[in-house]
Length: 152
Image (cartoon, rainbow, N blue to C red; front, side):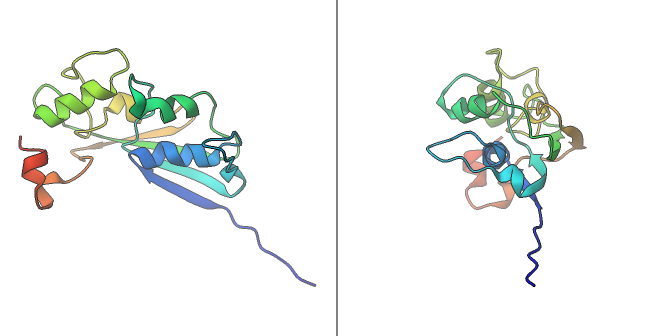
């Protein structure tokens, strides 16, 4: 007698990895392949992931996955950092928030993790949400050349 254990896993995705994780859960074909990951995944955690549609080709994958809900069999948690307002946290943050805003604003009125707004990171329908104060998207100051990328 052979018994095979089938275990389901949790998927954790940071930034674009969160919406790519959602694509993996889908049964629809994306790029010519349907992954059907919901058969193997019990939970999805997204960290600083943009979930709102926004203009531009960078958001076409998000728009695609937003056409469906999370599978009923998958629990989800959408985590957002906050404490980096678009109007006072430098040009990289203001530009990122502007890029991620579905309403075409300049990003100054949003808070977030310095790259993804709270509004977008917590917009995953059916997910629980968690806000973390003072958590940044990426520690630019800790990497060589970070001051060039994010000088403010």
